[in-house]
Image 1 (cartoon, helix red, strand yellow):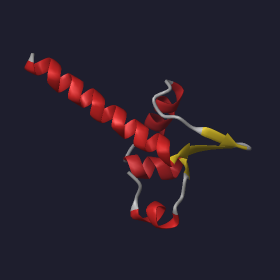
Image 2: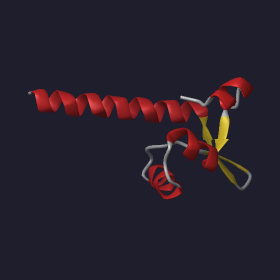
Image 3: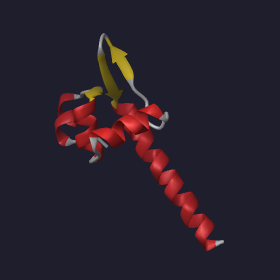
Length: 75
């Protein structure tokens, strides 16, 4: 789920602002996802970074939850 820029550069760690752009979410939503443990981050010094793999995991989680809710409606 990386943009062409990240895919081309092989960027593995994104700043919060970059992850916001990739996921099309606001800053407050990003920090809420981090706070409640739905989006994994790492710290390098004072900088909080989002691993590219964590973005893929979050998208997979959303897809899984979406599938489960569709399954519940069909039942």
